[in-house]
Image (tube, rainbow, N blue to C red):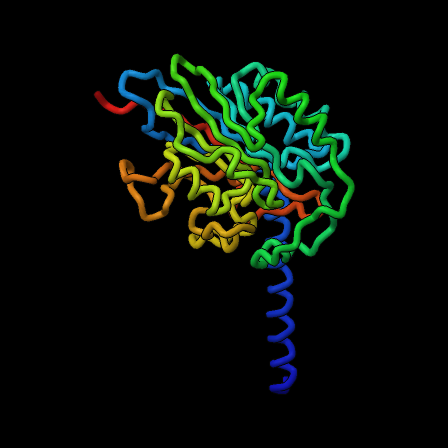
Length: 311
């Protein structure tokens, strides 16, 4: 066999193996969208002597009516018996999703809860190159597609949960007074930070900031105003991640190292520092229906157990 023939065979094998690896990777990424999990975190943030509070954080479900596996998984989360539900938006991905979503929530709607909406609650998804998820934010926003039934969604969720769209509110949970501040979607620049600006209520046992997208301007204000914990979603945890390294992008100005999970804000602060708070970012449980892939980033809900300080 000539050297040219051997080279051609080697190149052919390499290309073939690369193609097989690519196919396997895509297959894994598609399968991972159904590999749901629940992540657990403990946060010591309540006054000494308080009862613990179990918070179910839901985000970025991107539900379509055909996603029966996802709907059954959402319904199963009621078995966690949370004391509070925090929904940080992007529930919808289809015009007919509100009914199936509410059915999936089931008894969770009877649990005290709060919510804000995200961009994908307002506008229908559109076809985009999947590699867009790996690109830095170019400032383009999807506002040209038809509106989803977000008004119906707000009306239905408000029957049991507190709507925090550019407003504040309070709930009594397990004997503790929780004060909330929330903004409309920062990704669409719908947030009105002035509407919730000012010192967090000092007479509450815990102060919680809520937003769909964890833009730094929102996180900075919540922390500076004295909110103890901020909850957000939007990032999908990076969605297409690398082993060990994790997220490459966040689709906002939050750095990839904090694309999901529990962190401090500002990032270099510590508990007890003035102007510092806990930050939990959910990696969410869905994808765009036009890019149903996740890689090294399982779809998730989070159960945050808020604990009292030691006496």
